[in-house]
Length: 85
Ligand SMILES: [Zn+2]
Image 1 (cartoon, rainbow, N blue to C red):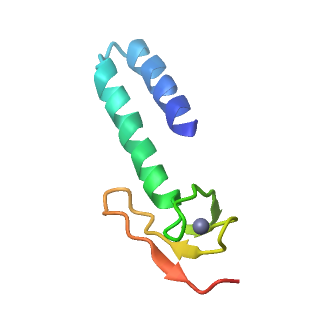
Image 2 (cartoon, helix red, strand yellow):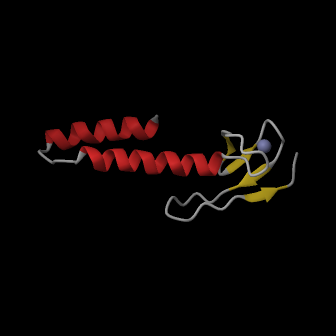
Image 3 (tube, protein in one colour):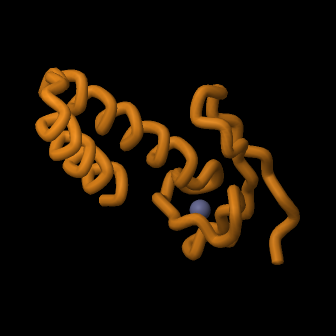
């Protein structure tokens, strides 16, 4: 939602400053961000989608698997397992 809101604000600013942004470019960026978020939040134990618990740390509420991810959007997503609570 924040990513979409940011793009809407960007479109407003671009219009004010007479800059064209291709609609398809925005759609591609949002799709890419969505894929990044999905990969980070998908439990490596049971494929359930989870919300970030702490900065770059996820905990699955179904199977209790915990994992850490990198916070660098350009890096390949790697989920590192952590000990369970
Ligand atoms: Zn799980």
